[in-house]
Amino acid sequence: MGKITEIREGKRNKKRVNVFIDGKFALALKVETVIKNKLRVGSELTDGLMVQLVGKDNAERAMDIAVRYLGYRPRSEAEIGTKLRGRGFSEDVTNNVIARLKEQGLVDDTAFARFWKENRETFSPRSSWLTRRELRQKGVADEVVNQVVDTGEDENNAYQAAQGKARRLRAVDREIFRQRLGEYLKRRGFNYGVINQTINKIWQEKVNSNPD
Image (cartoon, rainbow, N blue to C red; front, top):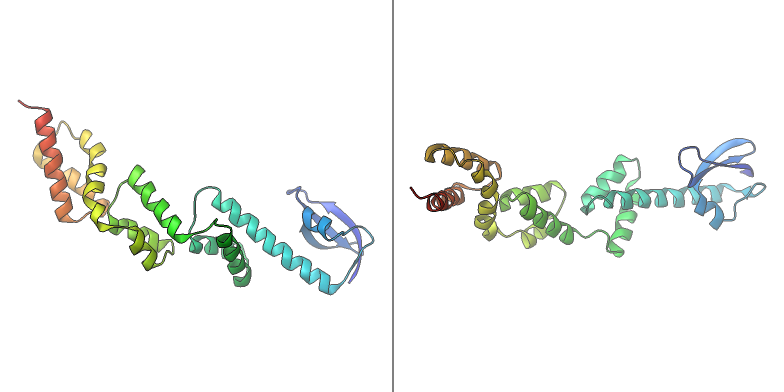
């Protein structure tokens, strides 16, 4: 292949360097990779070593991207895969990264589904049907979704979801109250039976707290 004639620090990313062979740019590598492989000006770089270094560097870059992506919130396996493929990584590299993340306990679709469900229940309660749909859209398998999401929680979730909206409807009559609260709960995926029961319960609480 040739000899390394220059190793130059990257302009945008100080953790990467540009490697030049016989005066021409050859490849970009992580500083750690250069140190680990004892690359320096004057080192001979064969075709085989070049392929090996590029492969390892791709795998490490993909891993770094995945870990940063996980830093914002937990992710499903499918989300990680979509992210990496969108950044141009091959299927093999993507699958290997996901396997490494699973081994390290950083990716777990069951844990992710529980996180998603609990987050929704805490900050934006909705129906089990809607939560199931969201998880499927994120690539979580049906058996995991069925294991985590329980339809029996809809009544409580509807009641929790309706609390804030009901407080903003204090000055309206019963028909408008039913209409607006019903539309609100419908957008969150609850069925008619749960909606009707929830509205009746909250309306009665409203009446009891404000007797004439």
